Length: 282
Image 1 (cartoon, rainbow, N blue to C red):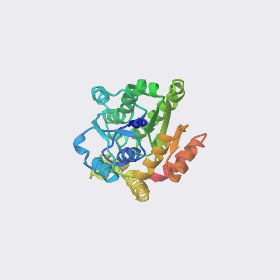
Image 2 (cartoon, helix red, strand yellow):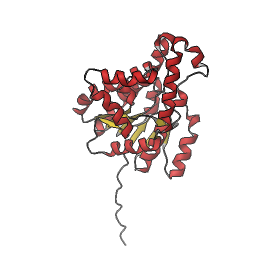
Image 3 (cartoon, rainbow, N blue to C red):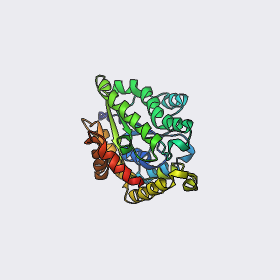
Image 4 (cartoon, rainbow, N blue to C red):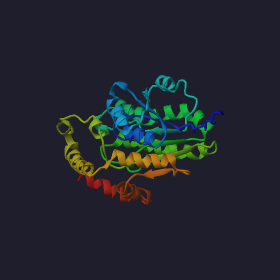
């Protein structure tokens, strides 16, 4: 009797997703695993992996959980140790921030840039040699805040603008080495991100001359998030982009995001954006 030949199975593609303890990162990790990707799911503190692991278990998939602090190059190196193939990177880790320049320190702004901009650069730089080998792709979650500057989001939008400019400039260079680069721009998303912006309970009392403007901004923003897109909806669009034969550079994840960013993208003299966002604080 002869033994039937074993038909080799395709090796799953591998994607590394940052910031997977909650929100878009968690949903993207699980959705990608369901789509057949081998997912390296990372977060700064793996003690906070309970929600991710529960979601993966419920979906009938597993993820490769690793610690990663995107602001620490040594942590990036340790996370990638032993990894000899990578097909995609999803830069999702980030932190919100609400404040205005007169009332915060430049060090506060630097801290926002460190996680939202330099953290993206740390991880992307480290994995580019692997992505060149696989002809892979980089997806970076920015925000419509990377297109339209928004009141009391000065530091956050500055970081996201920086990421957008960096990736838009990197994309044609990376393409010459076979690596595609995309940015993903959600609008309001129902996740823990908003609760992590660090705004103190007495923010209005401390806002001084900016209190009326901050009050108007917070009222408008709470309404926007009441009808926010879900993290799962964003994740499904992210995985579509991961699987796309020719991924676009920019993905706006909802009609609301497209309409909002479209104001800026068609605003040649800047007046439309100023008229739009000025109404948020008056």
